[in-house]
Image 1 (cartoon, one colour):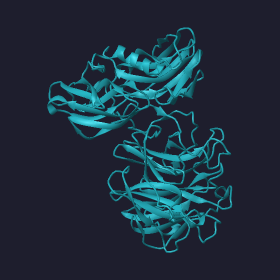
Image 2 (cartoon, one colour; image 1 turned 135 degrees about the vertical axis):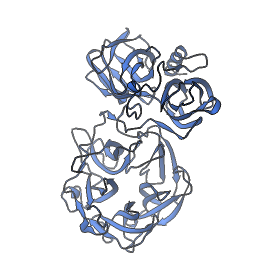
Image 3 (cartoon, one colour; image 1 turned 30 degrees about the vertical axis):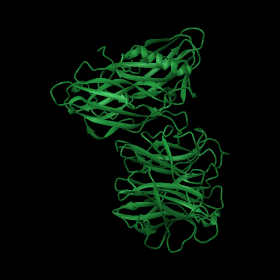
Image 4 (tube, helix red, strand yellow; image 1 turned 90 degrees about the vertical axis):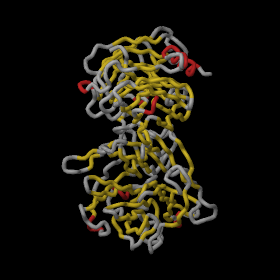
Length: 579
């Protein structure tokens, strides 16, 4: 057993009861209206780009029924789908759902698969050829079941009457009608790629002639050419309007950027003059942020449906070309006039508030006996569990929690008027876990669970802090706080459902030779508390805890003024019994 796991297990033994899991019960009523967040959407936190450690060019992301799904160009050889409970796919389930037949006109150069849920079924559109680029055409897969990670059937080519070169196609739904939007050549020579649209009878069939919507005629679209480029289309709906966001300039250059076509409200999308083209890119490279070639995007909602997010690929060097293209995300904003405000692409060290509702794993159907799958952990660890429940029985209920069929613990669920919240500790194995909660007597309902853990490498680093990769840490990274006066880490967007005292646990390691002290405080003028990490071995993380008063809703927690170098793996938050 490595030293990291031994440290975690040792800390767990000190914290938990004989059953192997500790329980934290709230002393006050879970629904004390004066102390509850008015609109609690989960424990929040931040993340950092990129969304995956592997190359994920041409990302297409969908959120449905509690999971994010991503497809992307996977070596040009097959179609892979990734499934994650969060927009971060680093610990996602991955599966190649389809391989092409050898020796066909779709067996090579599979580009930009686009996963879509249309009219009650899952489809994946992709471009492929026989090994010769001039033979690229659009094809479609149809899922055999309602599981996007299941098997698919090849349904053939999606083509219009011209049957010309075509890539980057997807279906657009508008006013109960379907349209196909793609990038194509006018003739048979690779001079430029245009944006085309055509009507569809169904998700498999184009039913009318193609209409030219856009040519790469702006200076920024021509960068790196010829050929000149319009490609990588995505559909964006907002307040009754529809937009086509596309990629222009050479995808092999740092000038690759996003442009936008906007349809006049209520107009026919098959009439080219009904579309207005933005004259400047809506997202382009930012040398100060170290972001090059941002392009080929998709749009996805937050888990609670209140936010729109863009997912796009970019590189970290102007010379990367088609290499090192990884998916990134950031939230969209709109001004009062309804204009899209994406802003600049975010650097890799920017701490981004997670999408609203992310990290709340909802039960497929609220009941007294529920299970939650795909709970990821890179290491064996003891982690906090926050249970959302309903109990209108007039008495306390007892629930048992088990992980992977083992280590059952009893949790008290006080009576509630609405949603109540209960905390516990659970032991997670390395890999994917399944959590089951059953209420004795079959009364009450379990609605959702959360794991209120905040990874230190995703926090905002101050003057005394820096994020690093680390294979022995809980999510493959850590933060290093160096000695000196000043801020080490800022954990922003810390959300709790009820005001009160919370136990803040820090997993830290200290190899300085002396005890390392740092201060921790909630960023509202509260008095800082002292945390001491004893000298130890590298990657030998110890759990130290303090009690802080947090308000219902959003908080920020700061680690600062370290006396020696401290490596922080994560921060856990649970409701304290010391009210």
